[in-house]
Amino acid sequence: MNLKPYLRKRYKTNDYGIINVSIPIGKGKYKPASTGIKVKVKDWLEKSGKVRSTVPNYETINEKIRIKIKQIEEDLNSNSINSSFSSKHSYLDFFKERLGYLERTEIGTYRKYNTVYNHLKEFCDYLEVEDIKFKDIDYEMVLKLVEFLQLDDIRAVNTINNYIKVCKALFNLALYRDIFKSYSNPFSKYKIKNEKIRRDVLDKEHIKNLLREQFPEGGNEEKAYHLFMIQIYGYGLRVSDLFLLRRNYIKFNNSDTRIEFTQFKTNKPHSILLSPKLLKHLYYYLNNASYQESYFKKIYPDENSETLYSYQELHQDRLNKLLKYGQESTEYLKADERTSKLTMGIYFDQIKNLKEKFTNKKDDFLLPILKSQVFESVKFRDSIKLNKIQYYHLMSKVAIYNKQLKLLMPFTGSNTNITTHTARHSFSNILLNDDVNLHSISKGLGHSNLSTTESYLKSFKQEKIDEDIKGSIGSLDINSF
Image (cartoon, rainbow, N blue to C red; front, side, top):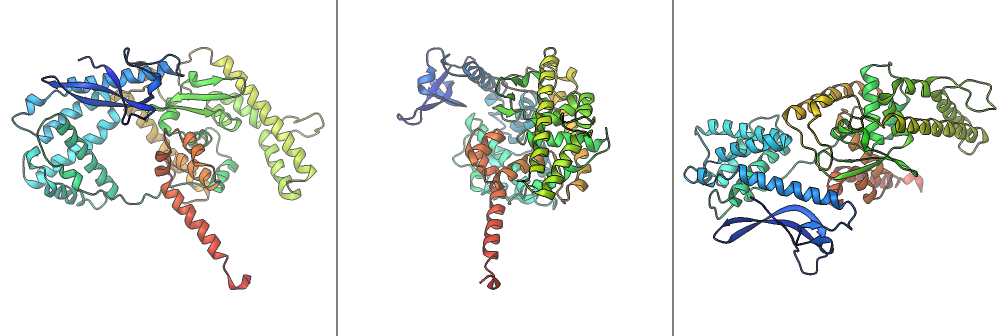
């Protein structure tokens, strides 16, 4: 099947349209299928089905369109099962058929769907039936399924709701493919009410406690600490993106040096400034010998100094003078200038070293965590697809990192359970509390639209509002009059 893309505008006055394809359903009839890719009408070439070459990143956009259409074609070809379902109309069989496709194409989604499928088979045992037919699925059955899932007291409400969403998605897909006919969707009647999620975060003081700590050299605490700070200084970098970073993602520019890559979870482009603080923690992994020499070897910091200092001692001296003399004092300003010069000197030396070192083996992973030979088949360009072995290898390394992060908890001064997600949540919360505008937070996180960021920060916002109001109202004390 060869699907040709076309641009569809919702309204005539729209400047943008969505790339769709027409799927033949017989007798000259077609169904539209959306790729979800939005482009400007003036940039679209209808005849060739591509974006104009005058558009920035046009090759990337055209490749994304090609990949999306290929996915739709594979989906249709591997799931053309109308005839096989015409007699039995089995929801579980349709579910299992879908699992086969997901296992080949989207292993992460496959894991989630497979969990739900196994629960549905347990639900059949609970109902004392062999199968679930489409015709049997009504609102009462949906409620029974919810009640069954609630029998496990440990299972959270939001987890149950996510399971129901998967069931609903498969039901809708079957309707779309004409597997069966239905005039109502029982899943649509079920109102999913999620519980409020409290995201675990570390505030500035907790992270400063980590920065002040001296961890045993080469130990798991030190390794986890540097990875965690790379996530923090890397704009709340997701752990999947952190582990999958390649050498060629570092772009050396005259004005600044950045890490530019396609996000594993969303397939959206992202860009992070390679700041001195971020590079410091990266360098622990990139060149540990140079890292130790740069930050712990004692040197004369300037021509007027008679005392040898290490990088760490200079920072401590700067802090001591700040606390003793104040931010406007001559003593502090001199210590601050000296430390800043040393910091930038180390940074530019590291950048120079990276340029020389990264001329070869540009496809190697930036961090020595994943086994390169396992990922030789992966093309890390605009879309990252991992097979089963690669995905589970990645997840096993994430699990090890999560265990190591628990070792950092005593050093933070907080009871927060630290996980790979904590860095992203903490980064977002710190920016929010510092009144950084929503657009900057959204871009920093790599979100493609503000609504995603608003949803992500929802729980943080309420806590900040409560804290601000409590502080303001709390000042209304009779003793203050």
